Image (tube, helix red, strand yellow):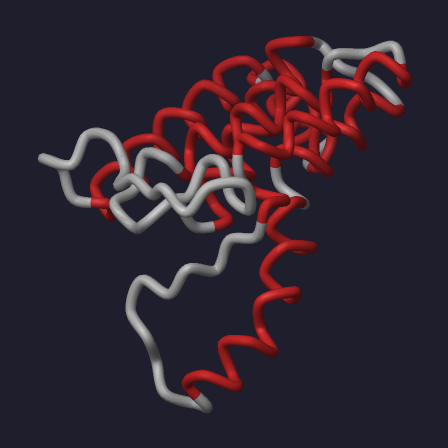
Length: 155
């Protein structure tokens, strides 16, 4: 999935769970920010292999984005005393597993790979529907705050 569905799902999760302070930062770090760390790691390898040529469905993922990362995220959650990193990381890789490009859930321990779920639907449609639903739910949940803010602009 692109960055927009990750942002929308994370925002909705923060609202639904009523997170505050440090937990909001952890939610965005593990639900959204993993891509900001993971993809730059793979960029030099991509450029070495392809130069400036575009490779469709390049395997951008490192073990930081695969379920195997729960081996360090779950202990981190216990250490921090909050389930937020594990919950939002799970939401992140669940979104990624909805799209059709190759995934390696046990990488680097196993070369086994799989495709996404819901393969009968286009990746673009999955992203648009999911993002739209999350944005609509976020607006519905924050309606009072939005109305108050907009009303304050014209007062």
